[in-house]
Amino acid sequence: MLRVALVEDHERLGEMIRHALSLSGIETDVFSRISEASYGLARAEYAVLVIDRGLPDGDGLSLLRTLRAKGHTTPCLMLTARDAVHDRVDGLESGADDYVTKPFAMSELVARVRSLMRRPTSISDLQMSFADITVDPAQQTLACGPNSVQLPPAELQIALCLFKARGSTVRHATLEHAAWGISDAVTPNALAVALHRLRRRLAVVGSQVQITNIRGAGFALQSSVGAEGPASTNPSIR
Image 1 (cartoon, rainbow, N blue to C red):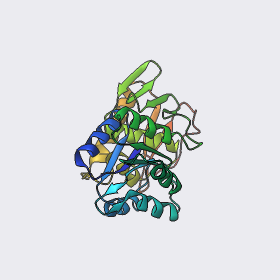
Image 2 (image 1 turned 120 degrees about the vertical axis):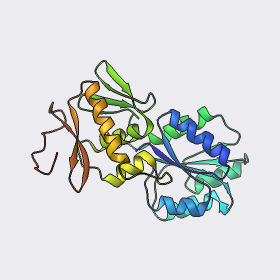
Image 3 (image 1 turned 90 degrees about the vertical axis):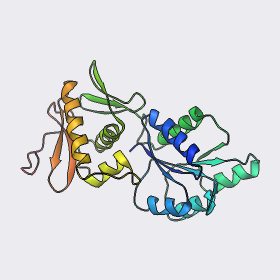
Image 4 (image 1 turned 180 degrees about the vertical axis):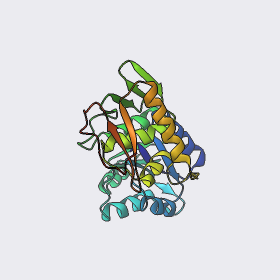
């Protein structure tokens, strides 16, 4: 999923980073303290961590060291107001993958986050395709051949989560977290509404891809053109 965990206590800066990443199709959960981040990171998965060193309840490096000690390998970008060489070395030796020094240009931060998202060998491009459909998070579009439509943030994240699964079932909770994170309140029918709209957009661009509801399990992509395997005959799918 293209969702980032940002640990930053400066409210205005946190919102600026969240907005800049959103413009690139990357949604963000913002935590202002180590305690909040520890709670959130224990309950959800993220593509990248962005952690400020100076936090009200400790040094961001202590959070990173704890995560690495527990086996968390999620790429991490450190934010620091310290420009000394030994501070950068401390960050890298604590498990950080990259760092930026304040003040920084938002375009640089976004570029570094996107670079970290490409690090896993299974991800060569942030664009994702399935059968006749391609989703471009940078442009926030869903395209089938020459036809394309814009995707709102929640629908974009749901689409990317489903596309990454490539026909496998994705749980309701996973899709909700991808779309709205753990900090936003989600109404009971929010996922159903978003999926309904996403299905309509697939029809508008003329795609043969369908989003199937696996009762009691979640949702999956299914293609009638045969590019991603045979259509399921499970009677519980509708």
